Length: 219
Length: 253
Image 1 (cartoon, each protein chain N blue to C red):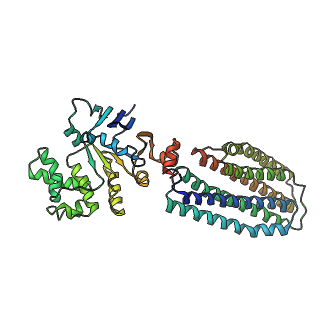
Image 2: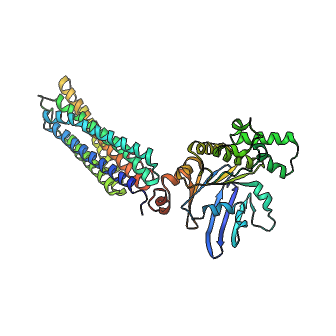
């Protein structure tokens, strides 16, 4: 018999809210990458506006967590659910910020044509998006193995990031506008690398929530 | 090097007639530690607490097997003296129970019985004990008035001071704040934190937040078994046993 069914129901609502936030952020990062590859200013503008929605999610989740801590004095796995939710919500909010960062690069490129077709960035974007999806799935399923598998994908993203850095250096010349575009593409790669890191953090959160043990996936 | 425990229960079993109330309890408590005993009603935590100064001796039909060692000495051994045991291992109860006499005489009662007669010495003990129990400033101007005029929280601290006056090593507390208001509760909790510098404290509490706030180690009892003992922060963030988890998260009742 559950003697705290009201509280445990609130915990379920908290987790549901977090997953809704997660799926909105997933959509946002997908659209950000799309806006860049198609140089779609309209879509980029929409992403920047929609970030407010994500901030609202964060506020709601923060307040719910603090209220539950203050009023319910959670213990053990209940406490870990709440502590993890606070951290995951922050990671998701950061990912959304990077979607906005990428959308701003799209706006900056308005009217220009790309120096060369994007190759590594779409690959990085695919893996980063997959990592975010996997991290949220691991959260839903409380699946430690799925969470731990993020480490390998994160390594892959890190490698792609170093290779894009090499490529940008090799393409740098004397033409200022071209160099500026290359710098911004490197920034986009950096944002995607950060997205992958935040997804990895979410995976670490899942492992802690389920097992109570800390595991560093980003080594 | 292993630290010698202040209190050690070894394969301790207790029967009330046919009822087997404690099963093979195994527990070490080190000096200057606060140990909290938690668990649902009837789980054996108060029974276990009472074995530590042989309070169960007063109940008919009780049979005990196994050992309880205090400083390595078996208190259930044939050569053990109950009076000196209870001087060393004192107890505070759920409801404050001051004697119907003055504040001063409440504190001086124990030392007088144990042979201290000189007024100057008794004065010193009274002041020291009341100070240790964080009560001196509140009662120093009314030492010779009845202790029954004190508030519940003051009475409970008086009972703690009365205990300290006979210089024990171990303080047993059986739900010491369950009859107190929240502020008095916090004062007693705060007091335990200073007392543990000098004493070893074992506290039974139904208030899990209290166990979490004040203790160093926590033991979870269930149906006469000691399910799990661990550092308090471990118990309340990530206990090992599913039964502990279910109890502290309220998933059974």
